[in-house]
View 1 (cartoon, rainbow, N blue to C red):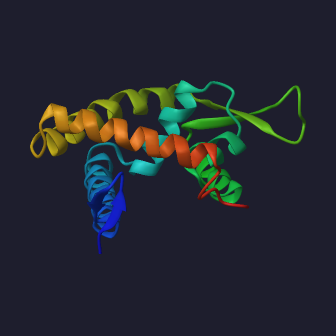
View 2: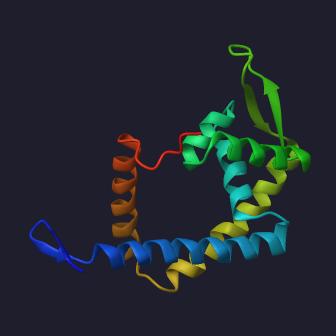
Length: 158
């Protein structure tokens, strides 16, 4: 069913279905390649990259960034800790929370996995789309994400 946006008919249901299916297929393909080459999955890669790029992040920061519950974020960090890739440190300004950091092993793993991630993602996307289409899609998704985050839509409560 088409809806009117700016006077033009748009198939929002089809857009949603394509968006979700593309995300799932890309995520799964990256998952397979990262597991095969580095023994991690995409969610672990994303957590490692966030921790590297946001020194002193807390579990609550991860939950906010990835729109997941605090419990899921904490369990993700627990898994990274068990592998020796991340560590919790006491938060000097708030004893109720910990600051998260990558270990040297975590940094090395991320450096190796980042090459695999970038190569695989480039092959998957460049093989299907022209650069102008990727740029337009990236701008549109960034705008949509900003709006959803600004209005706190889809944010877990726990």
